[in-house]
Structure formats: C-alpha cells, structure tokens
Length: 316
Image (cartoon, rainbow, N blue to C red; front, side):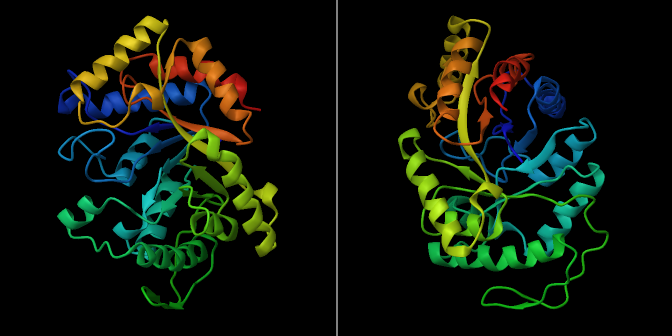
C-alpha cells in the first residue's frame, strides 16, 4: 500500500510542447521510482481542477496514461488519485483496472471516490446527481468491482446498477489494493472500513486525529481490524536544492497560474532538509504515509528525484 506516493496533478508545463508532454510525465514517474516512491498516481479528471488551474488546461485520461507509464517503470504501483466513480460503469472500471494490472505485471491499485467536480459532469454529459446519489452509486459500484477483481461473478439488482454473473477474464495478476479518497467521517470513512485497504485523507493537519478516531470507530462497529488499513495524507510541496530556488519556482507557478487555489500556506516549500523535517512532523500525527504532488516544479528535471531522496528515509 501507499506509504510514499508521487501524484502528478497537472500537465501544463512552461515551454513544454505537446510532443514533449508524455516524455516530461514519464521522466517524473521514473524519477519517482528511482528515488524511493512506492506508488505513482494521476488524477482521474478531464478538466483541470479549479484549485490547480483553468478547465481548458491539459488533462490526460488517467488509465490510458497509467498503462503507458507501466511500460517505462518496473516497481512502483500505479493508481488514480482517485477514480471518479461517476465516469465509468463499474464493470468497465473492473476490466480497465484489471488490464492495467496485467500490462504492468501486477502493479495496479484502484483508487476510487464518489466524484465531486460538477462543472466537469455538466459540461461532458455525466450525470452528477445529489451527494447522496453519488455515495449510493459508489457503494453499489464497490460491491461489483471488488467481486470482479477478487475472482467472483457478482450479480446486483441495485438502485443504480444491475449486473448478472459479471465475468472478469483474465483475472488480475495480483490482489489489487483498493484506496478510497476523501475525509468524510460519516460516509467516506465508513466505506473505507467496510471495503478498502487504504484511506487517503484530504484534510487539515489539525483534523487528522479526529479522522483516525472516526475510522477506528467504523472499524469497531463493522468488526474490521483497523491495523489492516493504511492511512495516507494528501499533500503538496515544492522542493529545490535551496530554499531560495524553491520559493522562486513556487512564485513563478503562482504567477503563471493565477487562478490556482494552491498558495504558500497550503504547500510545503523549501530545501530538501526543510521539506523532510515538515513531513516528519506530518508522519508523527499517526498517518502511515503521504501522497505528494509538485504542481509548481515537478516537471523540472531532478526535482522529483530530490523529493524522493529527502522523504524515503522517513518511511519505515
């Protein structure tokens, strides 16, 4: 499971033309693998998110991209962070993740969530529905997808999905771990306790303890061993050989992406030792690991490598 994950959240890089886009992404994945990251993750979106840029910025379909990255890596797990359940029928999702596992030699991971980006749904014709609708769909989907990934032939006559003896052949090469993203204490963490191997929290540091208590409470009620679940925390950083370089690169990102919601206070910015110290404090809160993105400078050669070398020693 994810103890140190590198997420690639954006594909709009200064002075990188379209024909160099995939090589730039590939280099990040290779640097991540070589520097100690255990998982490489990409977003499952079709428009860039408002906290990172504008809707018309570059966004690649995640499973096509992950399958291509599988051919350039050999050890890291490959995952979305996270799949929007509303974008694919669960049987298609099960087949897609299985295909990723087969072509990667058993390195697929299923990250999944209920979906939330309303503009994307409305613009591209995906049904958005209510908050309750999306969580009902997610739970039905998990029952179908997990059955198919675990070698069963699930049937479900649900409110949202109807399948009968759904076959998944070939089977995955490995037991594909399931990560559920988000920090909702009533719904999301209950689904984690019931169905998942990992919780990827998106929350303020001061809220981590409460989230962990909520997850433990759900596990107790459901008879699940809490120690079976890995908890990671989603974060953003900007690292460079010196603090001055890191600040310049982060400021340049904010200047070229004025609509981005990422600001200095929400990202860890500094030289490797400073960044490592900040992440050591995060890991002391009780989470098992972190996922990290570098929206400001991950495209710069060597930055992902620098980050991995700084953080890998912190992970037991």
